[in-house]
Image (cartoon, rainbow, N blue to C red; front, side):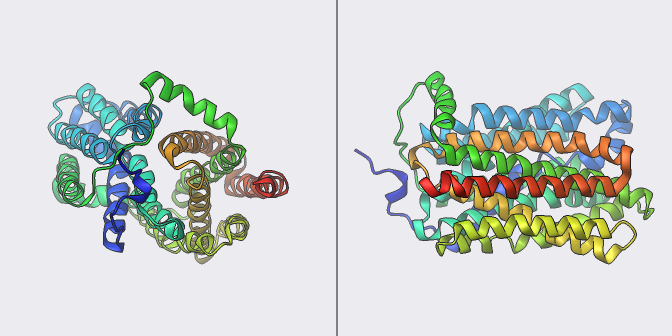
Length: 397
């Protein structure tokens, strides 16, 4: 019988961990390339701006499908093969997007691209499985840090490339980047023999069984929902604030994503804190940091330094919360890590959808201060849920 992936004779070096982090960021960035290009794409393909906005929705729909129906396969097949297969399709979809003759074709290709963006969520459990138990938090933090940087920097990179060579060049560059990463991964990563053996229908049904069986997972799913809800709430509504109160252009607004990226860079330290045996403390600190971040953001209504400081603190807290959540759930059954990822990430993604909806309604109703009040309420609710988890689930585990 083959050894499970956790004890394979493969050393996960810092360089390989960094490569996996870059793969995560590059994969998920495909969801956001179109956002700053919508007006340009609308003009080139002769559709309205509102119709062009459907491209973002198409990518998100595809990503949800990938999370639900492809990521669980990581528990029953060689994760390296699954990653390479998904990246190969992503390369084809990006190349096709670059030469799309009409809007319908581009939209369909972005759905496929969204599905394959879920490659990132196959990479994460693979990285965790290859890591030593004493380094699981650090590896989770590094790889998830790459994913968040991909989300935050995708719009900036897309806008810069489009300024240089047009929107089609963005997808050409994306295809080339994915191809280079796929070749490197194929050469470096070891084949991994899965330890589970289930038919595909049973595999999908088992996700609900796992959710029902694991109270730790359910608790972290709730915290993940709240963290992504707050993240989407802040970043969606901050666009309105920067445009209306500060009068910044789209290009300048995009630069603020760099501040968020800077804040997220330090978040992996919470993973190392968890590795040192302080998992409860790391979660408490992260959510307290998110709450402080909302306070600074509220002060930033007419104070730009406070706003920038708020972004730094807030994004540090949100990313750290995400890392501590995943580090905890990956400590459950190693044979189920891909399905644990699906359960957690689908809930996490729905939090983002809820936050985006709340953002537009809240800003229209009460402006930036109402948004910050709701965000602080979400953080306070998370701290209350965490206190309950510590008193019940975590104490019993």
